[in-house]
Length: 116
Image 1: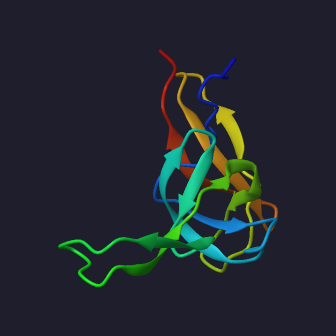
Image 2: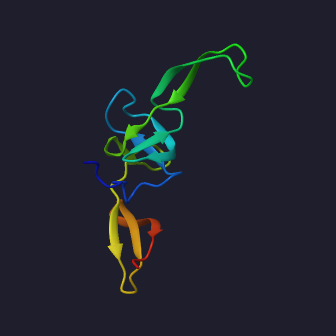
């Protein structure tokens, strides 16, 4: 029996992430899309795919594509590539904020969707 779509609540399309385990450990990139509980990160986990000749690719040959990485193996990072530990805080009006601590100060990462 297949589980429900278990996406991460802290990671979104377009976020800059760093890979924490695997062959691409330590490399950073931006998330292009989600595939169930996996993410495709731009320029990381490249695999070669054999392609038949077509109009778009008349010679055929090999094409490098990004393979999915499990969402537990990536972590949101700052502009320097250091991983961030995001925490969720709810306000009195029901809105949420993702934040992290830097130099004992709270830095807001982004607002979250309000509950229905």
